[in-house]
Image (cartoon, rainbow, N blue to C red; front, side, top):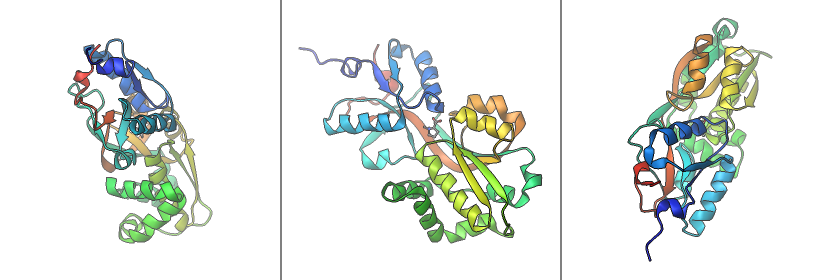
Length: 267
Ligand code: PBE
């Protein structure tokens, strides 16, 4: 007989993550833009749910298509590939930006300076995420800081210790952001700040900064993943630029699957 198409094999489903994720919104743009994705559906789930399905499929060498991203440990745990995205709807190479509330520079000038200077590489973030798998984000952040004191010293140069000043960081629930927020938390605590991290949906995170409910975030994926939230709130916040360059979103499949592009998915 004939081999079933990829669509038939995966029941025309792409395994997604949380409804509020920027990536879930990009999926909707993708399905509208690619005519060959007519009839395909997103199975909304959660990041742990998606990772569970991925793990199970790989164990059985079954076909599966997920919405994935890097930096993430899924790429070191499994042999995966991004499907090419010729229409660019999933954003290409992106960055993570730091955003502050208006007035933070005046209220907490040293904290603002540290946030403005905060910059690291994908390898740094991956090291924290990897370590946290077997310990905790708190311990992983402390370890990274110990091993990268020169970088931390650049961020904190000439800033003063404080006593009891509070700083509230808004974040999102993904491991990449748990890594960056945990490192910033440890850096600020070392200087005497009392730090709160609140992980929320990206929409709420942007709103919290724009309304001044939170002081800052290091978790804005731009220019594409969080563009709808950024466009809505950009006049009411301060964009401190990239803290990491080179993230990527996409449709991701196990390397054993015989497709390379989103355009290989047939209706
Ligand atoms: N992510 C990881 C998030 C941001 C960080 C790509 C899953 C999203 O909003 O889609």
